[in-house]
Image (cartoon, rainbow, N blue to C red; front, side):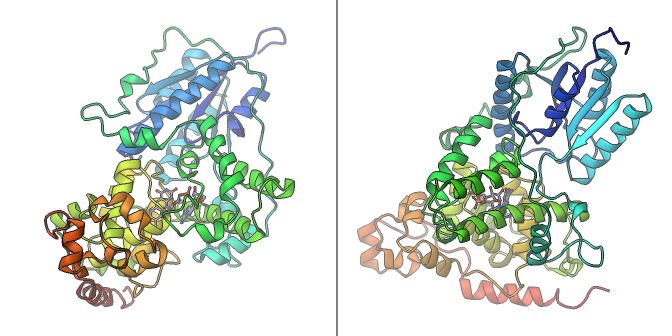
Length: 491
Ligand SMILES: Cc1cc2nc3c(=O)[nH]c(=O)nc-3n(C[C@H](O)[C@H](O)[C@H](O)COP(=O)(O)OP(=O)(O)OC[C@H]3O[C@@H](n4cnc5c(N)ncnc54)[C@H](O)[C@@H]3O)c2cc1C
């Protein structure tokens, strides 16, 4: 580049960071003084990349639309390409004569391999490549235990993270950006042509009613939560009938918000006194962000998180094959009201409360003795927050095969869980209206309702609502027997 010529463009490659504020890749690209080309590549063909599930694809559509609108308001646009990401970016560089490419880092093995291969190729041709941390508070390699090994226990991990510097203050949204014209010879694809949203049938009505996608909606949700939800979070977060958690998970998943933004916004709200939250509420929220970080720590050091038992002894687990039971679980027809409520909430809204996720996952892996990977795959397909790290790590945690997992003998009793966390059955009755007429005393175990109670409620077990597909005590014993087979140390 001569002193007089205008600088060659910089490409900003958006991935799981679909926002303009606190986006280090966008920020550094803008600061370079180069005109920008902003691009997203839908890559469903590169080796090892896990294709998005249906609900996440639905979310992605709205996310790309919203990001394009934000960039348009700054005078640019988001170009969409489809195909092998590395090839598409290389072609774009060649077509535009771009001198630099910016992105925020990813932590899955296939993504890292793709990114580092591309970086090497581009740098060999003199192109600047700059990657940043846009997704985590603490990147996996920056925190290790005393022996220089990855952590396996959350409390020790989080303590070590807490000893590190405070996460960086978030970058503000750019007030202005300079864009480079899109090269005429390079074909983009339209958002509609990606067919991310379902058509026939259109099953996304419940998702549309439940969510607004995009960065602006994420900030509104965060502000509302800090104003109304953070106070009492430590107590309310386990109660599925209370809107007691932030519901920020899909916004974090797609990077409409960074965890840094949540971290600092929550602390600022405490300082400003705009929330009546206690220090315990704040610490609890930050620790939940910590669990997300810990999941990425696991994904980074154990890339097969979604496919292989972290504890190899679980390879001996005699999982059953029972398609009818799997279907009953997926459809919320197990006969256990809390499990059914959760599975229906998931199907309808693309989200499920954390306490209920644990109960539903435990029911699949322990009561039904079905492979946790079957459950993980269903969540992957139906959650709007389906996350490559948090989903498999949470499943392995519940199944007992994971890092710092729940002890194998802890088998959630779905009735006791319901009585403890949904004592008035508000949540269960919301999602399982067939049980609406039953008194609270029996609603969580309708098979024990008296004939008169059933008649008054219009309930016929096996017809209007399923009889339990397994008996709790027998299922528990079967699971414990099966789990014993895994307790001998791996060879
Ligand atoms: C079987 C199972 C599967 C799960 N799958 C996912 C998934 O695919 N994607 C996902 O984001 N979370 C997953 N979780 C974790 C947790 O249930 C959700 O993050 C949480 O319910 C999201 O709701 P929220 O935003 O209101 O959470 P809040 O309680 O408000 O927490 C704030 C944020 O912290 C993070 N967080 C909270 N709890 C956890 C946790 N246990 N593990 C990791 N991160 C956490 C989330 O990013 C969340 O948005 C799973 C949990 C279980 C038991």
